[in-house]
Image (cartoon, rainbow, N blue to C red):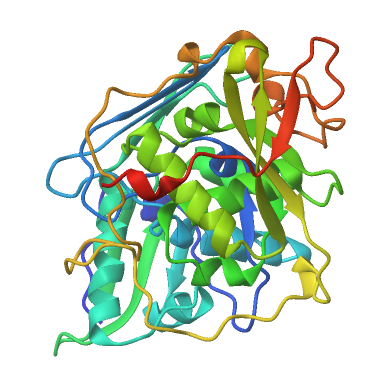
Length: 369
């Protein structure tokens, strides 16, 4: 096989990790599940993401040629993290330096394995490498910013005839350390990979991270959820999309509800509630989805499967715009390693005369994108 002289490559200093064969339970990294690290849009996004809450800051930027890594591209990181955790469970050595076949990766995340999907995979790897993240997450008491890309470098291994025999990439240490710490990893439903919409994919990860298996679930004010997603859609369009999800109920293992808090003077605030649903197949035993006609979310070859939804440019999102009282007060006690920033107290028993109306919302038919 042809391959470049590693020279100054980071791979020259790392032992390779050969991807494990067979089914591997999918696991997701907690920090990636609750922070806006990825574009939720099908169209190329070049506008940076800026998210702040307390001492936590996330900045995501990309080069115009590729755009930001998408939530579909993140499937590659989910697969890599799952491989690392499985290797740890088997007592095998792990590394940031991965060797694998495109077929292995694509089938593991429910993709088809044709030439088109292979080209889309290369586009996803290019976006992951060109997207730059600056964050203060996991920096200890004396916090500092750390900068990295989702993939440090990648390469395809080809025969002299040009046929791809395999691929290699190197993960950033920030992500790798977050997977080695088992407290920062959650098992997810394999049916997640079949979700085609950016918002529904993101909302599933939020539900899995915050609601978990708590019977009473987790509650967010809808405007806060919009800011937390860093979506470029207007709030009105985002709200319509969420209400459509309430009608469809696509999230595996979770039910979505909208509750309206009616305040004095006729004012109201809408809350979204995520609750786990009883399932005959727990997440840890869920069947692997069959490979389908799914890609990395973008229609142009070399980039990443949801319709464009209200994509309109806005300023970077920051939780500084959300009132402080809307970033705390848990619906239920915090699960381990949960953030209080997105919890809301159940207001049904409020003493100031306010009331919650289940699923109350203004009809969406009058608003168009």
